[in-house]
Image 1 (cartoon, rainbow, N blue to C red):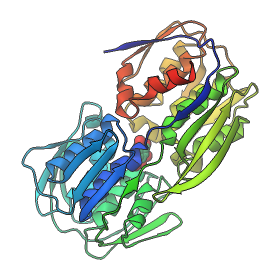
Image 2 (image 1 turned 90 degrees about the horizontal axis):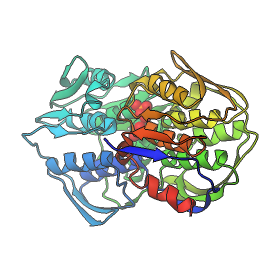
Image 3 (image 1 turned 90 degrees about the vertical axis):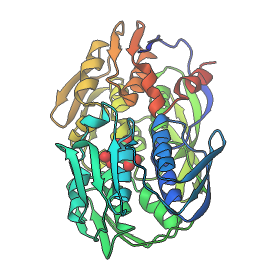
Length: 426
Ligand code: S3P
């Protein structure tokens, strides 16, 4: 396991950084281009290990996928053929949950496996709606490996108990190949990349508030350009706000409103952020963001409909809140316990080691700022990429050097992370 030393940055962060491609959209691009008949060119595809897992699964399913350049893919889709070996989804929950929706309606059986962390994550949330559609899925007590016995599925009207884009997308993907009408309704709107991409590729889909309806559809093969990942940008936004004197531009950031909870929180905290150069790329909103150090950030409340719009940013928001005056209270985020690690208990335990005044609650955490962070400790990442990157950002303002154990997990979503930070510190 790699140990990374991070010490206080003595210089402000300056210049500009181009944010690498969105992980969620990259997964969906491979999946939907593999379903569409014909050739699609995918530009600006994520180089994270999770999206590689999705490529490998679809190659095993007989899709012709080729890298034309480092981040450009050519996909010739339209026919999925069975493999007799299990499909490995690695660490990627998105791969396992979304692919299950596609495979449940095929006329052959499939087995999906995951690494140690993925095998501990709950799969009942997708098994239940797929079973209601007629799917036959065996699991190990609601966990991977999943054995899917493919059969013709029937549409449902599914009222999801969770606001989860993975659950929603799984059911919609199953609906693309099911008889009748498939509707998913969720308590609050989760990221809608699936709906946008399905519309872009000509699927029979309608959205109305928190309800989405699909009917069996043939997808058009179309080129897709992927915008930058706001979840990756969140580490730079936080660093810019808390490292004294920083002032830089973050380019090509996806600003789909179902993902911009982090921008709303920064506004609530009084952070100095400017969104400009707004444009639309392959059906997704995109912009550049200028971030400046902000001395007087204020703590705030984060809960309810905020949560699905910033679920992956909560670890780095905790670091940000440690530098805001007063209390920041996060509620309604109990699903954070089901991510790559139990992100509530692991985050609280590790941030306490470097002097953050943070307490765990059943569905979130409470932070009291503003504190000078002592550092001088070794932090565990629990095989969790977002914890590794959040700790790195905290390390930039700690009085003493910190050690991050398992820093290589950043490769799951953001292999360019450290190199891009170095560019801002030149
Ligand atoms: C994702 C949805 C979110 C998010 C995950 C990626 C997606 O999970 O945490 O990193 O691409 O659909 P849930 O939908 O389960 O909240």
